Each structure stands twice: as C-alpha cells, then as structure tokens.
Amino acid sequence: MSIKKKAMHQGMKLMSDPRVMKLMQDDRFMKAMMAAMSVPGRVSTIAQEQTDRFAKMMALATEQEVRDLRRTVRSLEEQLADLKKEVDLLRSKHDPN
Image (cartoon, rainbow, N blue to C red; front, side, top):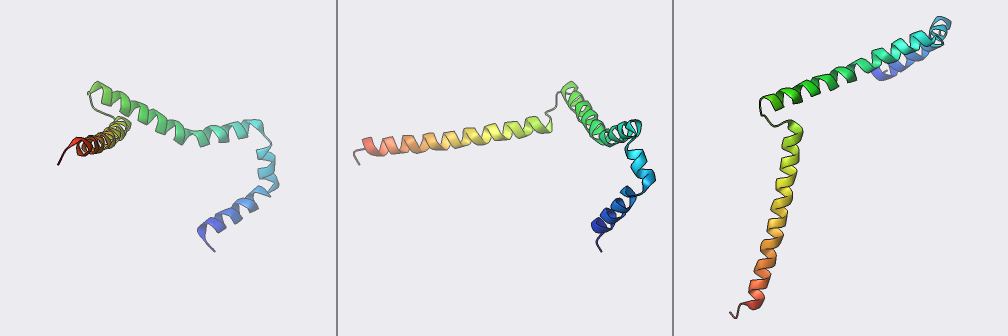
C-alpha cells in the first residue's frame, strides 16, 4: 500500500473515532485548525513582501520584474522581426533588380 493510501486509510479511521467527531463539531477547535492551516501561506506571503521591500531598498529587480522585462523584450524582438520582414518585402517589390 502506498504512503498516500495509508495516510488516507488512517485519516478515515481517525475521522470515524467519536472523540475526533466531537472535536470537529467544536467551533473553537475548527477555527484553531483553520488558523493553523493558514500559517504557511501567511509566512510565505510575509517573506515575499520582505524580499520585495529589500529589493526595492537596494535598487534590485525582483524575480517578477525580471520575468516581466523578459516577456517585454521577447515581444519587442518579435515585433522587430516582423518589421524587418515587412521592410524586406517592400524593398523587394520596389527594387528593379
């Protein structure tokens, strides 16, 4: 049996325990569980905000800003290539050779 299946089996077994069922009905317990589950997300968000703030203070580009700039450069390169093709096409039409 895989780890995931074992965990699911144990979880189902635990959920059928009357003591756990009683706990799950307690609003205070559920609020505490929800708060505990949201901690990793909040920590991650705070860490990202601090990183961005530090990058701004040090005049550094953030990872997101670099991605945006790369996307913009790629778009501009594609536009430039299209314009070069258009110029070449116009030259070939007007070139008597």
